[in-house]
Image (cartoon, rainbow, N blue to C red; front, top):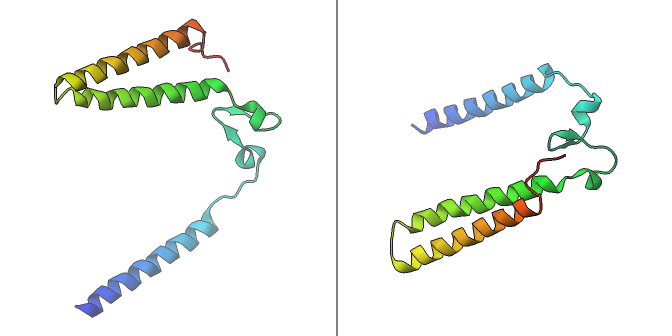
Length: 112
């Protein structure tokens, strides 16, 4: 029993090492500009990386996180007591207020 387990573990390690070495030697290695260059959210970076980041990506990420939290708040309605309904309504007020502010200041226009 122990011998079989030891054999399987050693065979698995041998197979893992063999496949890793084969992959390393058989893979195509290109050092083009596109391969080694930085990829910044769908556009090529020109100059320093700090200057090429668009704030619109950050705003869309924040909206995604907020709407994820909204889904969690929907689960609070399963309990359906007054405090969960009130907290859900307050969250919806904040979400719609923030969405209105983003629309009013023109932050929802996707310009890169």
